[in-house]
Image (cartoon, rainbow, N blue to C red; front, top):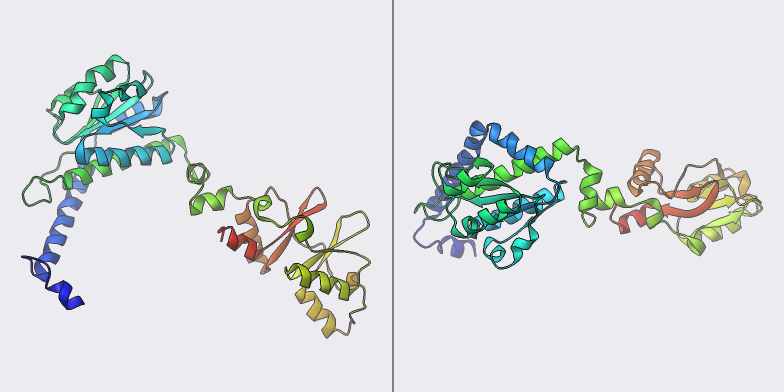
Length: 332
């Protein structure tokens, strides 16, 4: 199979294909590195516009620049700067109504002469929105019309024909990321803020899932009265499949915890199944409140080297939790 693939590279020998790949990566890496050296006060001015924006950041571009614009809008939106993408051609046919006086538009065009963008620039400015142009040509029409121009020019495209946008789109994307991250830091946007924008992701589950969301409740919670025997506690452990049971006093408060480990130690020390569970239970066991984050329960179990916790609110047992519940919730 590998031999067949090696012989199906068209006019390129394998070593030439590798050389081409490395050349493209080198060109694009140099293009991004050059941006850092050129970054000036226009960057901070653009950032100030984003931070002062009372509406939304509207990102727009045609063709490949449009694809980059979509990604920049998505990155801004997920890092604390409300943003969305508007297609410039569609803007001329009604979508311009999405743009308001409180907005900031970021317009992407490598040449700075994209007709579709230039046709809506006067209308955007007339509405009172501010304009940030991200182009590869500081002398372009779009750059001149903008409140702030960000220079994303590159020395060369990675495409050997110099036609397909390659290094230029990479540079534009990197500059958009730089703006988004600077805005994130300026806003003090933290992991919990990020999680609220990504509730379906791993971080979101870790930071937004509470113990009460995943704990077992009602009949699923193993519990026996403090008058129970070891045998009765063992039956409750077995029937609820949690490896433990709460022991409750007459007022319904948690008096102790009886686990598989406690059972082994009780039998080893000569206690029979008819012995009172209070004689061998763990008194004042570690508990957790239902309002705590599930990830805190994981940390507590790891620290204590235990597999389960009783959930107690205001002195009353409200649930139980073990590591399998946390695995199922994908918190671990």
